[in-house]
Structure formats: C-alpha cells, structure tokens
Amino acid sequence: MGLTSEAKLRLLAIARRSVESAVRKERPPDLAGEPEELREPRGAFVTLKIQGSLRGCIGYIEPVKPLAEAVSDVAEKAALEDPRFPPVTRAELGEIEIDVSALTPRELMKSPDEIEIGKHGLIVELGYSRGLLLPQVATEYGWDREEFLAQTCWKAGLPPEAWKDPRARVYLFSAEVFSDAEIRC
Picture 1 (cartoon, one colour):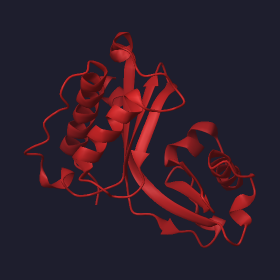
Picture 2 (spheres, one colour):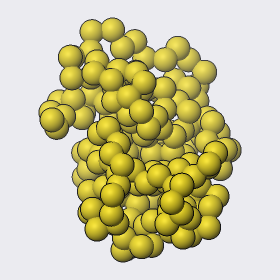
Picture 3 (cartoon, helix red, strand yellow):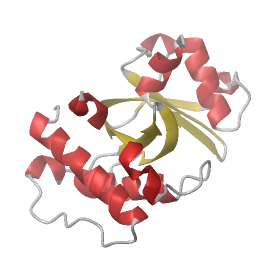
Picture 4 (cartoon, helix red, strand yellow):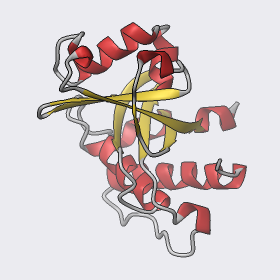
C-alpha cells in the first residue's frame, strides 16, 4: 500500500529536521503522535545530495523500526556517519536535498528476468558480503539488468559476476522514493 501525500511530506519534514538537529547537535525531533501509517515498521533509506551530487546515504534494509523513527535515524546517520563523506556542516544545510526511500519487504530473485529497472532495487549476498542498490540508481545511470547486477556485486566488494555463484542470494525489493526537491519546484 502506498503512502499518502501527507505521509510523504511528513517523512521529508522528519528527515530534514533530523539532519538539521544532528548537524547542530540539538535534540532530535519528537515523533510522538505520528499517524498510523508512519508507525508501521518498514525499511527506509535517506539520501542526501548537494546540487545533484551524492552527499550521504544510509538506510535500514529490514523493517526494524516504525517508518517515522527509521527515517529520523537514517537521516541523522546519512548526515554524520556515512563513511564515504565527512559529516555535513552547518554551512551545507541550506543546500541539502533529501530523498526518502520507503522499502517493501525483499523477495528472493529466481531469474534476472524478474528485475524491472526503475521499480526494483537489488541486494546481493555472498558469504559475509552484502551490497544494496536502490531502484532509482539503475535509472539514474542508464543500466540494464546485467549492469545493475554487476554494480550491486561491486558494491558488496564482489566480482561483477558473483551473483551467478550458486551460493549467492539476490533479492528484489521496491521502494516509494520521494524528494523534497520535487516539492520545492
């Protein structure tokens, strides 16, 4: 079931307040009284960009927390703890664009033909390695199914064809992705 427009706006506001309070070292937003649809456990990712370039992205694959709480947590982590980037600074707060991805439960892929570019995200697991790419990544880079699988393997630190290993597990998931950049336009 899809999120309402109001829920999406609320999640974007929660993400922004969480980023701002984390960077300013203030108390995180109070999430008491959130609507029922935001109290349902779901996986979630928050992606931060500045002028279209990635600035941080962290998420929960599994539905370990209520959606509002998950978005708040990962927004803070994307701002301060993404190991690929230094922490977001106060000076950057006005430039930050926020995407929220609310995930569906993952399902084991039986065939690469199941992958719908733009709809599905991928998780590749082999041994102790795991890589995840959100649905919008393949679209942004113009990848086909094979390249999407190869790039997800690379994200896991695996060779590009590792998904073909009989021990590998490839999962599909969908995400509702929405951005505060869409609202500002």
